[in-house]
Length: 110
Image 1 (cartoon, one colour):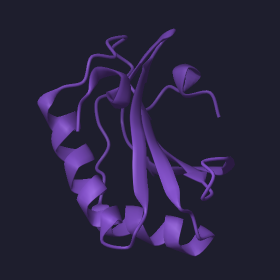
Image 2 (cartoon, rainbow, N blue to C red; image 1 turned 90 degrees about the vertical axis):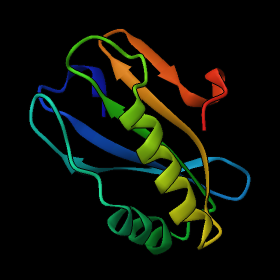
Image 3 (cartoon, helix red, strand yellow; image 1 turned 180 degrees about the vertical axis):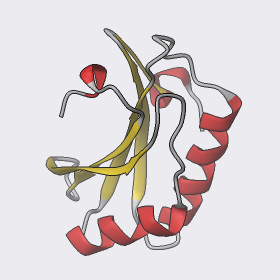
C-alpha cells in the first residue's frame, strides 16, 4: 500500500515478528481528507490476532506536511501504552506526506 498516493487519510499497522521482520501490513482506519479516528481498543485486537511481537504505526497526511503534531504524539503514546499491556512493542510511528516521511524513532519522540 502506497500511503503517499491515497486521497483520504488512513492509518496502517505493519506487523513484525520477534526478529522484527515484517510479515503483514493492514489498513486499520480510514478517514476523510483531514482526519481519521483511531481507537486503541481496535488497534490492540489485530496484532494479537496475527500474533505480532511488534508493530510500526503509519499514517498519511494529505497536506504535504509530515511534521508530527501534538495529537500525533498523544495517540502514539496511548497506542504504545495499550500495546505494551499485551507485550507488543511499537518500534516507530511514520507519517507520510507526499514524497516526505518522518519517523518518530529518528526524532526521539515517544
